[in-house]
Length: 616
Image 1 (cartoon, rainbow, N blue to C red):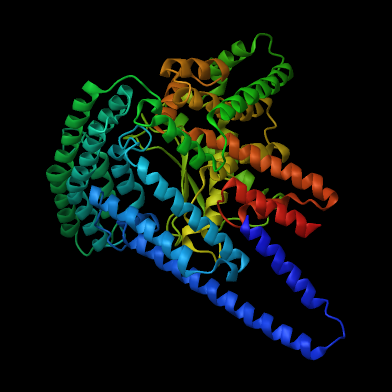
Image 2 (cartoon, rainbow, N blue to C red):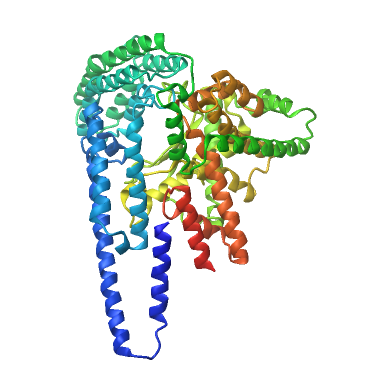
């Protein structure tokens, strides 16, 4: 990488300057003056580029009312993002122009090392986005993971804070704007259909069910309040208003917006989904899309930040599955289980000792235990980390309106201003799919030391451009999450062998992902083939397996990031240990991995190698 060369060159120059002898002092003084002037020029160029990054970032933030809300800002608080074809074309042209400005208006050689890294990351991101414009239709905006049918109400409930009457007015304004936003999104869905791009048939059932759930309950139907009405009532009632009439008026206006905007928008969506469902096919892989093979190659390169091919990833998955099965056999010996591995899987699927009851009390017990696991880990962080996040972490169950289709567990980042903590979501729709032996690994992955640790620290970094604080490379982010499941094993956690089995169960889940993702999208496996492979080689219940395969189908390539990222982080650590011997400090290694935020794996490797050199 260019950044490595420049860093070493600058170090040599510094060492040369500090080792000047007692020779020609005039000449030495001139050299020093020249180097000081050069340093000032470098600093000026770095400051200039960082100011440019800030300007570009804020331009994009101000162009996205929704991103502003994610960041805890209340500008454009009553608006939605524009999602027209013209806007997509504008954004593509903007990316091309931004790349041109970066490459022509700034001198890379005059930047300091930190800003050189920002330059490399910005250039890489822009090139990737420009290339990705070719594939902007190759996505499924309605899907069971985070399609807009469920993300709109989730956004309102989880991110639109109401601390004043003005915030409530903005909430109502957003409700009133849902119909227009839905029209733009549905126009995009129709354009995709014209190009022969539709999700597989099974996706539509999820989408239709979610959409119907959004307009279920008051004021749409009889019964309890709908999710959105209950939310606005709770938020408005929490305001300290001078009289109750104002609160009642706000709620009445919200009900009107729900009936005149939200209801027709979702009824139109349901009608469109039913029309598209009638012509959708049961072909599942992206090979079915126009230029699907090239699209999948792009996705793997984008997701893994490597040049690994689909066949290489497939074989890596097969090898890892075999290795982890061997580790699981050792657990079976420890607990004295007699039978085959598949029989052990079945035992862990059905034995009631591994599950909380399907009651509200059982769900609360699960949440309480998850909090306890995270609090215990917090007390041990100093053993293996230098930097720790300032932002707090909370544990919540997935809301009822989306729990049927949402994933098993996931994480939402905290607001940058501290107004909202990070959130570890556990999906407790079926307690029979949330075994207790996986609780530790899940909490470590989504919470601490996993996603919350990495993402919150990244947001809190000083003196780096904001695009790096809020960017991400999936293989790094998810690789860290999976590495964070393994690290506690070395710290003495997973003392219960069944809990350690849960860790292995989650690791083999990610290893199998390498096999089934490439199987679906490269080898043209059917959905049923993928389900059978995952069910045979993992202990997860059938419902878990089906939901996972459906996820891999609508998010091609994404599932390959976890294991590839984890393996890279582990291999770099082993390399550093071998090179440094007694000088190796795991706390310092983690600092190196986390201190620059999310990075492509190749650049992370450069950073670790630079650290090894400096330690030597």
